[in-house]
Length: 282
Image (cartoon, rainbow, N blue to C red; front, side, top):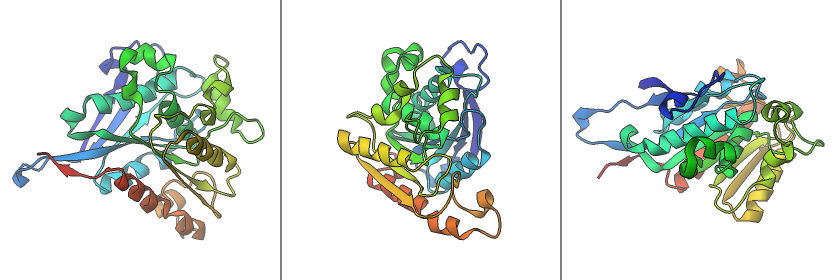
């Protein structure tokens, strides 16, 4: 495995200011010259959750390694946290997706198979590049190349979606907006449009942190706009289940984890039907 960390601010020559994040961690397959061939791989970029006040370890490397084992080159983003707020996190997410698109040839990635996965507040951040890849904050970094910040597929795990105070995750919106922008302008279900990439969405009915209405509203918005989407809401479980294995849930493995674990093979199959698979360079 090849591991490195990319300073996205340095790469894009964009002023870092007080930013503490903007680092892309890479988990790439080592080339094997003895095989006399070059493999091109899909990419999976992971945005962990944490309410924009922390980065959840269980939603970072454990997710990346699951997709690495499935043949993807995997990446995780360390983004800024409160009191840092808009536009910083959005700019860091946009730079991460754009970096993978713009360096696909060098990294031996399939240039049109750059997926991203976001969990909880990381799902909200994913939603921003999923639907708002041409936001003024993104244009400030990428200019007319802002379309490179749009992933080719999006995987939403129990995402923060709506600013509706009846079902929102208030802390995520407060931390993201920081009093600088209106929460309704970053309520993802209101921003879904034609041209958004295919979306896989999953969560749990009993989620008492991010209510399941968030997941339903995102799916309904995709349906209304003609965006290919798949929704799985498991009747058991809780918020923050990540990959539902012993590493993130402990031993003995709770029955709800076994019940919700199928989201991973379902997701991988969803992506496979979209062409996310290892290929040999011609």
